[in-house]
Amino acid sequence: MTRTIHLALHPYGVGGPGQHGLWKDPRVANNASIDIDYYIRLAKAAEHALFDALFIVDSQFINATYPAHYLNRLEPLTLLSAVATHTRHIGLVGTASSTYNSPFNLARRFASLDHISGGRAGWNVVTSFDTGTSRNFGLDEHLDYTTRYGRALEFVRVARGLWDSYEDDAFPADVDRNVFLDPAKLHALDHDGEHFKVAGPLNLSRSPQGQPVIFQAGVSEEGRDLAAQVAEGIYAPGGTLQQAQEYYADIKKRTASYGRDPDHIKIFI
Image (cartoon, rainbow, N blue to C red; front, side, top):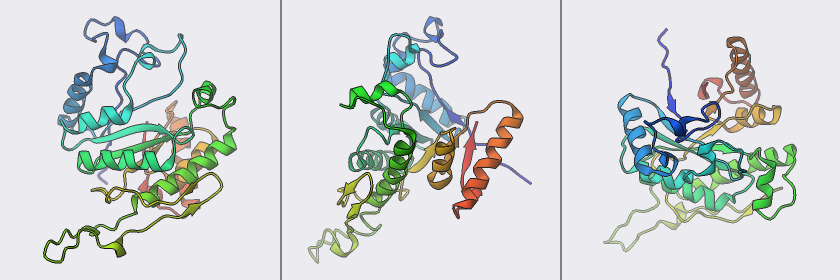
């Protein structure tokens, strides 16, 4: 049986976890983490090497002890939008928190990236593990696990609903009939849930791939359940071969329990 290996590039600029000293390497510019040309060069090289995706991690809280790359780096969707104009095939996966964003704005930003890239956008859904992040968004305390993951699940479902605001052929732009939009193919969401109330519709046509690809990287019970319900790609924790195999089997089992095809999820170690 022929199997395909999927590869994603995860640049750490001047140094992330396990690579804290990259900023000392003379081959790495000390402004690499905020140099868009650095990311464009890496993305083009990865595309030439037939990598599947460029993956950009992110967080919204730091202190002086954090790795160098975390202290001074570009916002993922802004970065990937620039990279998109210099590449043609490689997937562009950005990290964004479901805890500290709103569904309408984030759905619009990812759909915009999908349009700009010609259908190559992916969203790495995180719930934010840094407890200090709450204080950057007007909250005294980080939301508890149950609330964060319940919010994340609803957030993804709302985003997907917004991405379906327009049908594929909603814009005939027929000059003779004076019809730019077919109103029957525009759908309001009218979502009213536990965590969000979003009317919609999104003010952006359906993106080239229909919807951006959903990624997830949770290790906890709640994270694995979220991945099993919504993810199409997973960044797994790695570890020993046995641990990786156990994680793989667990995710596939959970995915099937939610009525999804386990083969639909690709796992990256």
